Amino acid sequence: MREITFPSGKDQCSAWHLPPAGVEFEGAGGRPCVVMAPSFGGTRDGGLRTYAEGLAAAGLDVLLFDYRGFGGSTGTPRQDVSFLRQRQDYHSAIAAARRLPGIDPARIVLWGNSYAGGHVVVVAARDQRVAAVISMTPAMDGISVIRQLARNGGPLHLVRATGNGLRDVLRAVTGRTPHLVPVGGEPGSNAILVQKGVLQAYAAVAGPGWRNEVCARTALQVAFNRPIRFISRVTCPLLVQAGTHDQLVPPAPARRAAAKAGSRAQLVEYPIDHLDVYSGSAQAHALADQLEFLRNTLAPSPTRHETSAPVTKKPDPGLLARVPSRKSGAPASRINHRLRLESPMKLKNLNGKVVLITGAGSGIGRATALLSARRGATLVLCDRDEAGLNETAAAARAVGVDVLVKTADVSDPASMDVFADAVHARFDAVDVLINNAGIGVWCGLLDTLPEDWDRQLAVNVKGVVHGCERFLPRMIERGRGGHVVNVSSAAGYMPSPAMSSYSVTKFAVFGLSQALRMEMRPHKIGVTASCPGPTNTPIVRTGPVRGADAEERADNVVGFFQRTAARPEQVAKTVLRAVARNRAVAPAGLEAHVMYYASRISPPVGRWLSVRWSAMANKG
View: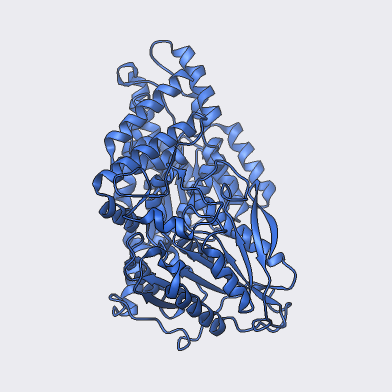
């Protein structure tokens, strides 16, 4: 066993490389490698090591690593269970495994248990060169996990977890050290995973590097971790191992995932609880089933040259027979029909697509335009700011894409008519419409001037309506689907007392987007409400600040956003990800996700947090 490190983001992940004890799996193209990582809050030196050693003894290379912020890996904050960051670590580990001497890059196996059991599904959906996936007692649906935790700890458990999570978020926003809570504990404790005896069970399989603590913000993210939504995009063979008596991660989502995967998946259930897979006969049986699955799946590839390109594998349906579940009797055609209705059109590839963006002269509009250009889109851009618009267009053309620009005011119907005529003279219809243009005023209701109301309603609300009215009919007429993104805000579902009138307009855009999504569904046109949290854009610097001490507060607000707010480029990634996945709502940034979660689970907590955040911004 050899200690190695590999880069992930700006940090280094520590890993063990376990070489194979035999040559059973070796082919002309090299040897397969199993990439493994710990479960929720775990480290590589625990019970996971037994599986790694068993796989290596059977003739497989194994790369077992710690996530950033855990064990021997670098990264801050420590003990932060971010499912998005951990998925990125898996991608980095795959790249490191493919660089190991003698490894066949087309025969990488992903192995994960519990939280990681869901990660490997999402990672395989995105990297279709992966040869096989082993997902053991997986957390396939965060909503089901939340419900199970409520059953284990009672309704007050979710209240405690939410309160602790919001406290941790507030500390993060203000630059303080994380608020840590236990990973596991008895019902009534502040632990995230509560069940009688769970701490003793964790301690029995944990290694010396394990700490019974994680950042409390983790609890706010669990419901958003839903790997089951990616299962239909996994093209390789998949072994799903579920515990029938699992009291931490319910087995029903694992059964549904296997049913959705169809003949690609093999579902095996064991009469065990969640942590029983790390000891005794349950562990032996699970490992034996994994090795049988890999022997059937990992046929040696002929040559290294032939396997260097991405491969989509189609397993023999007779080889990977799916164990029937309670829902697997539904006809496949019926299941596929339901999935098509849920996802009218997913624009995963923008190459050659026409993307129209209003307010493209700066901020989120410019960042989204440039990211779309890098992904091969043809751009149609408008803004009132001609100089800013031309700068965006020049940067996009430098990437090598075609750009149509037109100065236009989204609040003026006549100006939008001229713009639409110019667009449709060149294109029959656009593929993606992003109504981004917006303005803001920083003050409460009683300090808002009549002209502030008129201007915000005209740009933020009527501007979105004008865009939809002029471009949607052509998209419908063409009959090839498409997507609309209306840029709302986190203030569109959780109001800010510091921006009352702005919140009104963004609530309107949010509601319009939800109604329009249902209206456009028969036409296979998806609609997303993009909801950025605090973002450092020109709106912060150009939007008027009203009320007492306005000049001082304006400086404070600008300084606060520059220190703490997200960058437009981060929001742009969220926007295009929402288009690719046909998301109804796309919060962008930690604050936006927290506000969205709070607005659905505990609105009073969300309002309290909004008041605190507004006060901090006013004070700088």
